[in-house]
Image 1 (spheres, protein in one colour):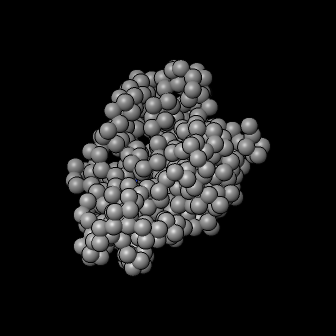
Image 2 (cartoon, protein in one colour; image 1 turned 120 degrees about the vertical axis):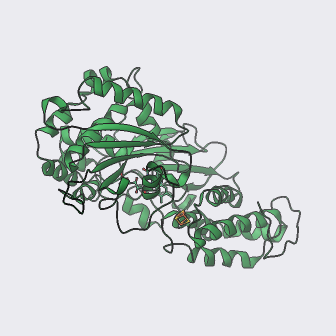
Image 3 (cartoon, protein in one colour; image 1 turned 135 degrees about the vertical axis):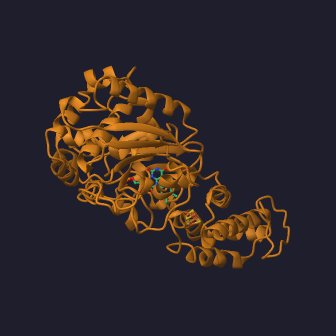
Length: 443
Ligand SMILES: Cc1cc2nc3c(=O)[nH]c(=O)nc-3n(C[C@H](O)[C@H](O)[C@H](O)COP(=O)(O)O)c2cc1C
Ligand code: SF4
């Protein structure tokens, strides 16, 4: 299937179903592995940055920030107060904690060298000699396979001193996270990497100025790095052409929930959500009711809104976001209040607690949804949801609070009738509890 896009070809997943795709021999022999690095090392760092800029690659971690531009923010020759040169660090965000997102795992287990090669090229581009791969602690298999891949890359001279006979050195180490969703936020990740509590930092200063261990740092997602070898070997133009005017290339999408063929797919960005669901085997066990299009934090869409294309701009226009590439499909057996409550419980648990709007707001929202489910909800609760969310979004240290408002607000806005029905009928099981509005049910 050409997905109505004559330029499309898989950039990342072409060989992932073949046995041994994770090994260095497979990568070198079948995928022309590390040839892009050879080419990049003959280019000036600024030329590499320019090529990535021209490719229109946008970060795949969630915010969709242009990668070439982020690389160009790194200072050329940073010095400390005494005029001594400062090191620069390149960090790969492999925390992948967003519910509904599971695509980076595929890269780490099936084609880890693509990401490693992308990081070495990135190191050359920004003038860094040290990279960290921050992997979510629960990813035992991923950590094992990534470590093997890094060891093999050292053994073949792609990492370490004088890479491929050049004067460029690059070391890469893995750092295991300790299992907190917030550690995926780049500044919390940097704190965690330094051995501190994983709490987001106020910005500015941005990581490009003050990053890991106080040094200029650049943080990118696994998939972002994995796209870089293709851009260098095939050219920015070819990569850009596969995407839209403002975002180049392909995207990995994890499709989960009520579909017959859940999994990770690589798609061009001009497919609609409905088309993606069809490719994923169609809706399972009922009719389509709602879709969360970009990981749990993306506002949900009703079935009648799913004709929307999945590029960044189309989804933003539809009031939601492409986020981290996780499409969660819900059929008509799902109670939206209950499904949203599950997500709110997650956010309540994962808020780092630094900002009262987020700490209290995520707790209140979870409590309120539980109260509605338990039969103690009132019509006023629905207005409170909007009021609480209004005090959270854009008011906090990091974007976590905004993320909480995505499912909370969109569920009430799009499925208000379901909330009202629960309020009228005494909750999910019709056992009206008459809970005081301010008391709620503590979860
Ligand atoms: C609460 C929260 C969690 C995040 N979790 C992740 C994550 O697990 N992986 C990731 O790559 N980016 C995550 N991000 C985005 C990062 O802060 C950052 O934007 C990203 O790593 C930059 O890489 P990119 O430019 O390649 O997208 C998260 C952001 C927030 C606010
Ligand atoms: S918004 Fe939430 S998660 Fe982010 S720093 Fe504030 S309290 Fe922590």
